[in-house]
Length: 257
Image (tube, rainbow, N blue to C red):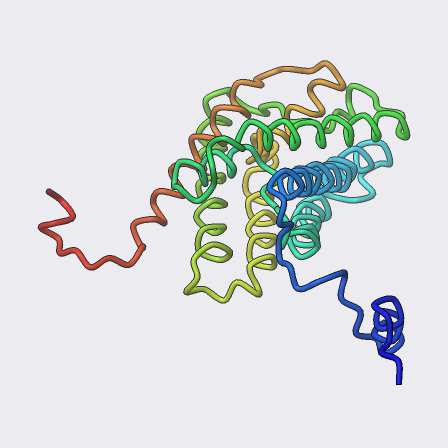
């Protein structure tokens, strides 16, 4: 009796409804291919993030508040959650502040930080360009982030909400002691809550790429330094604060030597 070919085995598996993409590999064995796949994941994930999140902002402005502020807040949380579950097993930072913080914590290689930031920023630019092409974007319908109050008010708000976000990311998706299966839901809910609190003050960016893309496409750079510096600083604070919960065998005296 002839053994079934690999192709026949795959067809049989598909027919049974148990199709697995190609193999038992969790990452590509070739480092260059693996990096390229992760960069593509960052680009696509950030594209969808900006398209949905910023799209809800633009549509709300253009169509008489059809989405509403609560709707915008939920939209941001939902798209983050969806993309984490879609490509989180490949790569799901979507945020230069998160990437930089993970590198500083020793959880991500520094040599890849630049490439990640470029992918994330390009994803945001392309998504912003898509929105600008399909929607009649007026100055009033600007879907980027600008301070509503003072610059310093937005600066400190962005630090706080990004610190909260990175703290939650660390606890819900990185710490092996956590139930990481619900990490995407927890992070998405955190985004929603942060937008509820800070959306009317600073735009609740929490992400330099989220602000840079619309600013570049629509040529509005008001307060841009806030949306680059504050999220990075806030993420670093949040990540290092959570790191205090890291299990250790050292005593207090050894910790504070």
